[in-house]
Image (cartoon, rainbow, N blue to C red; front, side):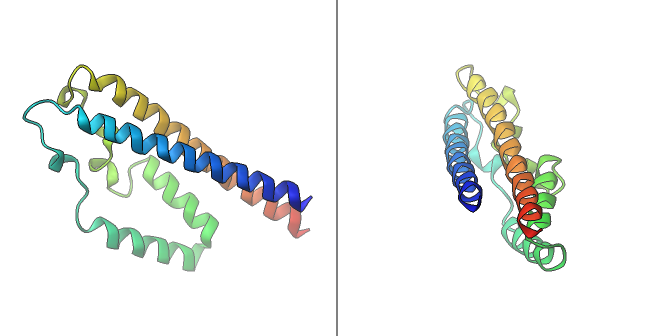
Amino acid sequence: MTYLFFGLIAVWLFGLSFLASLNVRDAEAVLEHLAPGERYVDVEPSPWRAPRTVFGWLFGSLFFGAILAAAIHLFGRMLNLDGSGNARVTNIDPARLTEEGRPYLDRAIRNELILYGWIAMGIVLLVVAGLYFRG
């Protein structure tokens, strides 16, 4: 039964890396199609984002546990509670893009939602498998 569990984790990790690469590709495609006069600097994250994120992960892992901290950060990112909405490519106003860039933005939004669903499914899988193998 442990082989099945590790096999599911391997499939989940391969799927996660594939979906993450799709998100990076879509983000690059959207940023390549900014309208003339628009700057990439307007969608860059703040310099304080990295220390805030590291502190949040350490605090969450120490007090809530790693899996619950991952779930908290995932839902915080989905609901834009972490302030990262200004730096996400999927939050760019379509008016700031060229006509060719708007379909790339739609695809980036769709792939980001699929990625969040995949991460949530993996968290549920880990919790259920942990409860199953504990007893």
